[in-house]
Length: 326
Image 1 (cartoon, rainbow, N blue to C red):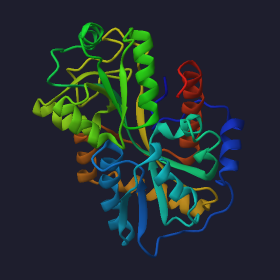
Image 2 (cartoon, rainbow, N blue to C red; image 1 turned 60 degrees about the horizontal axis):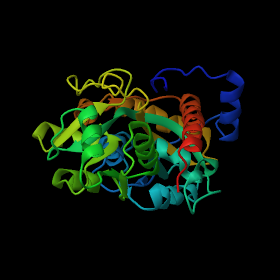
Image 3 (cartoon, rainbow, N blue to C red; image 1 turned 45 degrees about the horizontal axis):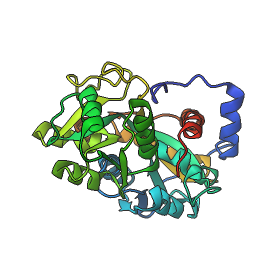
Image 4 (spheres, rainbow, N blue to C red; image 1 turned 45 degrees about the vertical axis):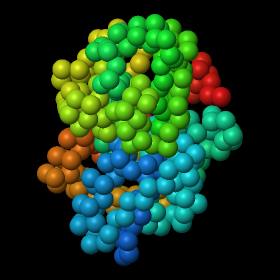
């Protein structure tokens, strides 16, 4: 599994420097500050973890810069609609993207093969991280992950899994194959928010998702978080076992929420974005907001984040070869 994003990752120096050179992160810098509003694109529906993270930092960045940072939700096409807007934007710091690890597998998606967003984007920094979780409707008669698997194997009607992005679909296929739920139905959504709504109503039975959107509903008793997918228990959910503790160690995953800019963005802009975020996450309200959502604030260097993106891409490429998207 991946290292914590806030740590320096153990990648060969040549690999990291080569990746950084490709993304234009080398060379002398001069100071940059935005002189007009900045748009932060969230390529998923409002209400999910990516959206919550964006809104937690945008207000503070606006205060630091003295310019509004406007969060724009552009869901659709597994995040590609919003992502494409940033891919095609000028590399001037005024159009930014907040994405999750699902961006690394876009080129594997049916109908999108050959489209590689990372070829036109520049990794800037991670902002926060959160262990993913296996979430179920509170209306199901289960209280553990093992009970959920047994329930779905015996249920008269096939169980359904809500997916807000491509990575969750891969996880669903892995769960169906490795836990033996042969008739699991994967239902596609345009973001995490709508999945949570249908989970509460039991219109869909379960989901792989970040804990951000599910946490308040778990506390209210309308959703069940059966397991978290980190190596250790989530600080926000100390009573919830990890997937390894629940007997399913293969389902480990930590979601990063990362900032990207159009490829070719000058180093001065990248450095200002990182510096502003390092300052922004010191704000107590920002930290409370992120912590309340079950996430951990982290700001990495562009080189560290580029290495993390590459690491996840290689890992997920291997998983998709085993469980191809259709």
